[in-house]
Length: 459
Image (cartoon, rainbow, N blue to C red):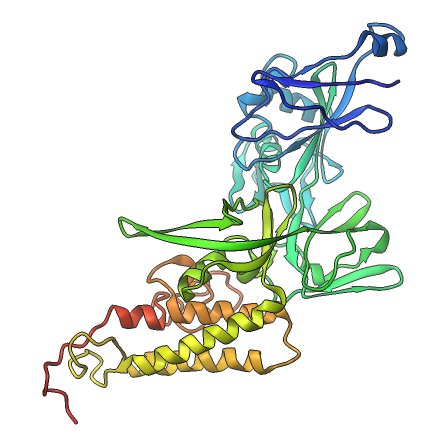
């Protein structure tokens, strides 16, 4: 049976979808600015006749791109469900065993859990309530089973960066399947006779209980895109085992604009002149310097702009990682030069008050100067190591940028900042507090000016 289908929205035709050789699948994407309301599938009379008459059901598998804002229970999807209520429709699908997450059916109320990628996804609490954790932004706790399972499924369909599948019969959804994927920057990739393995630069941020991908053997038959060292990779586990896929590289120019509105810092992040759209996938084993957002802040801290990067995408237009690749060494070299210039320009106040520094001249304390000098030395050691990978060099650049231009109280300025940090939010080690709340050397100096009048400075 061959069906030729055309999708149409309230705003007109969205285009002719691609069909498989069997003609029984079509793809379309739902975006927050263009929801498909009242989707109609038009089938020619000839194809109906070929199917044995007008009573033959029309079946489709439709892939929907998650937008990070509206999940499958949103009212925008009401027309796709019998009864015109998406939330109830999803609940009915779950009850009928027609919803699978990573190939596993949602457990019944008598069950106890559904793990995602060997980490907690949905689970029953000792008191009989249920909780779920799909993403740091998408979770819920201590809900009745009926609410928890619907909330859990809805949140999986909000993971921007994935596509989920709706099975439709005569225009109505009869089944739902979601593969929840995670992201990492592979420092190295090794393909063996049967399995592919990878390493990451560090140990992850402890934000979930999922295993480090460096501990996983990925069957070669389940590896897509021939990933190489320094690639961003997407990985997930379904009923057949672990899968690994190379993200799509997009050569880009990254630009950032920093704004301070009523004391709150914000950053406009652009790739090739277009606002960057980041994913809502778990990035536990992607370090900050290879995530979609933090590298832009590091650029602002260091005073960089128009930086050539490799943007990595999981679905079209959704960025899961950034990397500088071999250009990271040149970037770190420039940052070190700028840092050393700052050390020579900024004076040290022996009194710690600026009273011994000429009026209007930036100053720091002896401890601040010594701490930043250590940051410079640490970064130089990485640069001097010919075996250091691009991702390791990027890590040194990120830490130096924090130490140089971190903004007071800004979370990413103090988070895991080993020089002027506020605390170990990831709890990978002993809690610490340097007392500087993320304030970098140059930032501190620009906000501390000497007060000594001419001739009053001790010689």
